[in-house]
Amino acid sequence: MVYDQTTHGFSGQLVTILELACKHAGCRIQWQEMPFQRSLYRLQTGAVHLVPRLYHTTEREAYVHYIGPVALENEPIFFITHKQVPLDTEQQLLSGTLGVKLGSYYSPFINHDPRLKKYPAADDINLAKMFIAGRFDYIAVLDKESIDAAFHQLGFSDYVYGGLTYDHNFPVYYGFSRHSSHGEFVGKLQRAIDRMIVSGEIHSLLPVGMYPPLDE
Image (cartoon, rainbow, N blue to C red; front, side, top):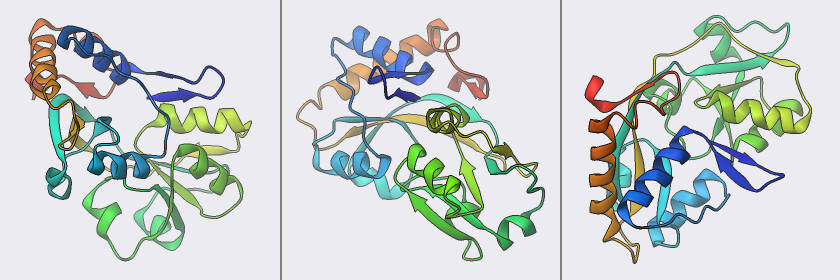
């Protein structure tokens, strides 16, 4: 999903799917732009009711109702590097420094391997700014559309995607706060999404690299 700084609007297939599901369920989404880690914190308190594009972890089960999965993501994790700086091997990655989005789950290797020298940033725009400033050598990327939009907004194009990638196969959920005052919509949204999957409505909206759960 992409946030437009000019229009202050959100776009992307997962945004469209959620808004359609809300329409079917009889509720309305009021979007707010905030760093991912802050949205997770506010999800724990119920100050934020729902976060899109959430991956399942056991740690989050204490405060999240998982709605979905809405899709299965089968797209590699990519890595951004500077032009003329190759990134084709794991050894090159380990010898440099890596920017990651705070609170995001990438893979067991990226999240937990102690050999990686990682530097977190709150969101894609800050990842891009820190990369431009030379704070780290590479960026781990889950959402190419979003990070490309951040670089475009900053007027920076001196970057490429390295040849190194990692498999990334995860079900994608919407996360609904267990502490929300609107918990009655958890079941309604789940039923709406289930109907949209069966009807093929979700399949027609998913981006490249995502597939409806029934194709698993």
